[in-house]
Length: 116
Length: 117
Image (cartoon, rainbow over all chains, first blue to last red; front, side):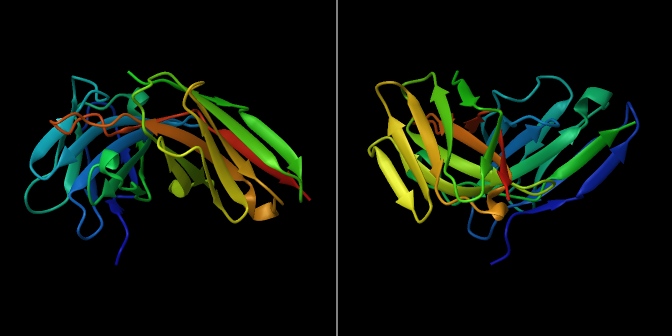
């Protein structure tokens, strides 16, 4: 059973470009969470999705950032018109049910975004 | 929302000694408290977790204690080994309501644990 997959692992963008980060959850997992980690800091929750639904996006900036988890295919975190402050590691995690229901979140390897 | 404080930010111990990392949380509704270990450039990996209906949980050299009244929880590593060197994060999760929200984890800022040979 493959773990959580993320691609690309490293992404370089120039200011103003768009960044698309992909996350394939573990098989059988329908809950996906995105986190951002700045250097030397902890992970900050961004958004929680179930298939085709955004459940909680309270940690995601209201502008330029969007997320989706379609019925088929990976979850996508999109950052439009990137700025240098978006440079960070973006991790996704998946679980078979909600964390409050007793499920562990399994993390992917992360995508390291660098904005030039 | 939830706020998690973690101390110390750096902890250096001699190999074989014990290490203790402490966290406090602000929202009494939080009911799930995992600890993650992250090596440099790698993904966070769950090492132990505890739910609010228990006060202590142990797994070999690792234990976690939870004090709901004081809203703090601690990670204890005994007989530390060089491979324990990493950054450790505590986290807390507020259960979602009937709509399923608020299951994201709120993390502490991390503790860089250094095991001295």
